[in-house]
Image (tube, rainbow, N blue to C red; front, top):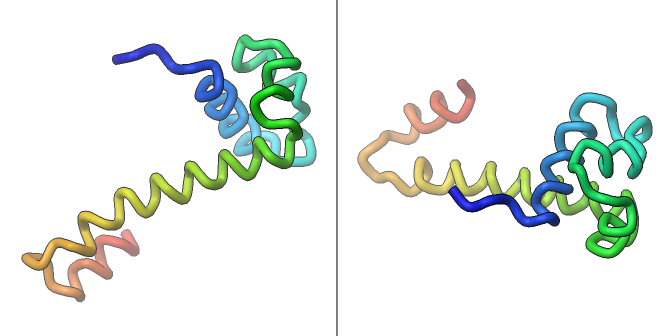
Length: 88
């Protein structure tokens, strides 16, 4: 497995902290410490906490749809079963 890029380390740390503490309570300094990067790099990659949050949400949505697409495209599974799998 390849090591994570600095940008991905920041995104993962931000995702964890936003989940644990919420957006308002998470400081960029917390993300810097959690990702073992300096604050200047976070500002370089994302410019603001809001932009970083948007990137975290974007990646989560992409992961969700990435996992849903194969299920929805599988014609061997009936619609009722697909709905059951999605709900559970």
